Image 1: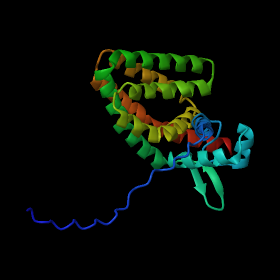
Image 2: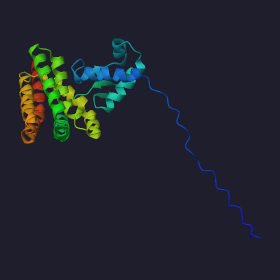
Image 3: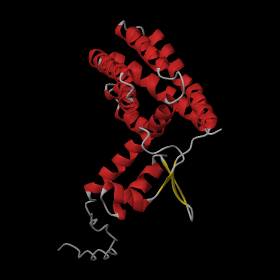
Image 4: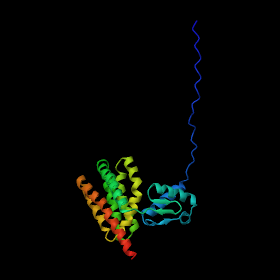
Length: 241
């Protein structure tokens, strides 16, 4: 006869994670976020400009709730500064901010260029050329808005073809402020010709798979954003005198 074994001690009930109750966020907030982001990146809302939830809601034909959510999201992207008791403002970069953004751009864009050259050379080249053609057409028509969008598309082509989603996500964190500063700098006297010239030099080197020249020109192009920003600030200050 087998010996009777003692019953196993009852294990204490372990707490279990209950199911999350997820509420689907309305797409409206995302649409409002993207619309305000574009307005900041392409000059409809100026750097440092105060933004009112009521005014934005009226202009966009929505309630204040999606606008409030949008401003909070844009704060995380560095495009909106929310000051308690004062309100919300479009970010106003200092020269040091621009220096640091240029450093970040160099790390990201030079890496993306090298990967795009290796992984999707033909597609990247076609997109770079198309963006540059669009930019030059827009500049000839004195259309700053379209030119700025094409300028942004030129740089985004590198990330669209780099084949590294983490690099793409990293660029998305800073592309908003970079675009807004780029547009602001475009208003500086004589700033329009330099980007196009540098873009063409990058395309020429990229087409030949000359990474040394392409990265050198892109590096200089990125660094020049500091000078263009400084010129734009001086031009705005002079216009106020």
